[in-house]
Length: 300
Image 1 (cartoon, rainbow, N blue to C red):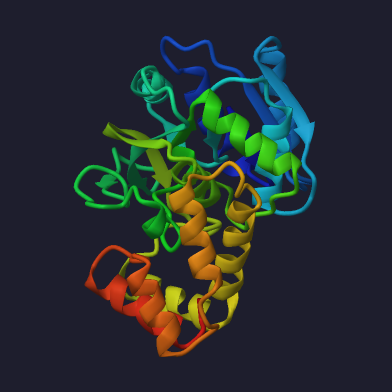
Image 2: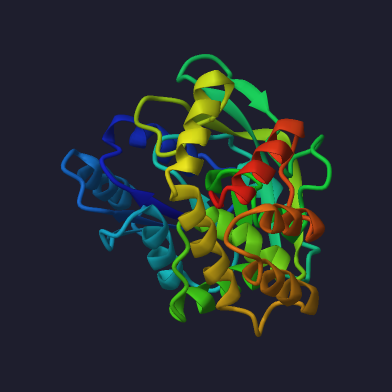
């Protein structure tokens, strides 16, 4: 497991306890502290002292969450890898369900657990994120280029997928979102995405969430601000470049798709129509309309 931490002391001990409580798994944890000014490092060191053969605490690179996770990935030993955030709680069977589901996957594989939104009280409210049961057509690279399957804390990569990411990170891949990139790479390699059936993550919602659940009017307005500030366009370009870095590893279909996207005009009807012809779609009617508008205006 890889956990990138920064000023996470408020909820970190609960997450660490849930990791220690994973059933029927010989788990290992590499936890990075990225220049925290609270008790994060002390909490991690205390946990490492409790589990000296299973936990390693390292210094983060100080370059944001994605760079932090990729730095941890380059330190990890060969094998399956799970991403962990510092503020959630895992159900005891999270890793076991993932490893069982990936056991028969010989190609690069990505497991995504079901998630429940959680305010720190009660059992949480389950949500169907893209790629989970009930959302059709999500596990395709054309969709993955414009919509992430789910949060990194719900993901587990098999050894082949983890090694591919490690090679690309070492070659200089610099995605903005490590989890979104992992999803794109697995599909670009012709790999397999598996959705979990049981809620295995309590996704804590609080004021300091790096992303959080973008729901309702407030979430919609936040998405619009992000899109038309130029941030969405820059992120889309960075994710595409990080994927294209591994073009020699991609399937012929994936290479053609990436090349087709990169050849589109920067804005205008031709870009919006190109997105549609290449199959770049988001879930839901409003998602598809919003994507078409953003493409036409050059916001993505």
